[in-house]
Image (tube, rainbow, N blue to C red):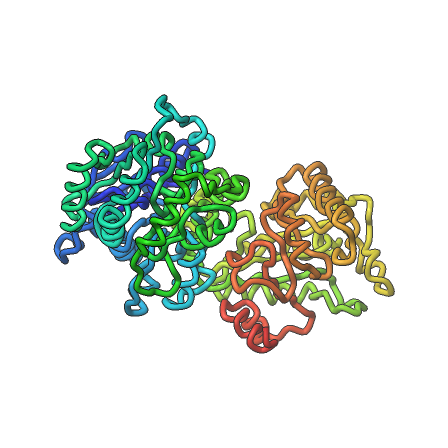
Length: 613
């Protein structure tokens, strides 16, 4: 379903974060989402609505104006999620969203300064996207962000579009090195070191070499670097040149033999099949090859280290390595399949949308949603070794108690609809809970359904895909009549009342002891049969006997289910792990106090502490 997405960006100078935000916003718009961008400069893209706002201006008065401007945009366009791309953008977005049900997602592109708990955690919103593993480590270790809040999602690359950019130069008798990056801050200082100490040697030794510097912020380039650049131009003329900021940077990199840069520049150059010397703000990776690609990815090609440490390039070592490349002694090779797997936009965009969904639910329901598990609802107590029943009389007491507490029932489909923006966030209940019933016993039709109608609740019914089964055949030695299952027509009554139907395998086996092929049959066939018989969508699956492991979770996801429902185990919240949803078993002798505990948002944490999980 389409979301209404607002991107907020500091763009007083053009950096990799701006390129990331624009590419992401344009792709989301192309995919059918309603996308808006608020940034320092209007007109950064002609494919989305761009609104000018001095986001990078941190004066108190301007920040207040920025906050009210954002609140107006969020209200007028009924925004589903705000995505900030800088600390200044996160700061004003956080305050603009206070008191609303709209979540904030922040992409962090570099190490963050350690501030108070508010600045290091809350202002970045419900979810944080970190662009490399070293940054994830810094955020979770040094800034102590909750690991469930932080996701590693790198800058995405459109490999198909990059493949269409081909080398166009005809003069192959010369070698071109392109230095790409902004010329202010640490990167400017490092490029200055190259101009002063490395480039003179390379230009002297290689008369066929041309060096071109590409990037903005020339006015902030160190004075020593400017003087050295002027000297090199007087000695070597057009063999060293400054091209400034240009939107043709991809074409220039495709025409280069080597690109010196970091971050997104290095990724794009490698995707263009151009050799890369990774020199970033935090470290020097050097010529990127299969041997150091993992470290390059982890550090965003030299820009980020988890632990801050002084770094200054080693001109002698850099000269030696570049000399080896220019003389043909070294020809770095790259595993492009690994590069594509890591940065492919077709993989990352859906994961960003998934991050949005998680952020929406983290904002709507920051505490765990109680998920309760029932089985039989007989008229009288039954003989069962598992004690998986609640009498009709007691079940009505439960429902009456839930209503007195102000609880409102939702289904997993409802949860998904709110999280993907297809239902207005304002409609999400203040006290949600989820009622689930396993197996489809006959007394569910005669007792549970009428009572839930009476008290205004609905639930999720997990059924076997074998519609010929008329009784529980997996729990031997129990009351046969109490274990009768519903007919197809009776099951359809739940669909008509708005219940969600989930799958519970074909034959209720212990899946952990089965092969992948056997498990996949139980999953896929049950889903197919239920959808055919009941003409309803099936997107949730309950593990028989509550037994699951990482392999089963992966197979449930592979089959196309959106949720995997466990028993007395799983993530603290649904958004923590869609394929291990924690569910609480309800027994026949529940007291009002035990029912109060199990239907409370704090129960899951209490249960984990009590069981030492």
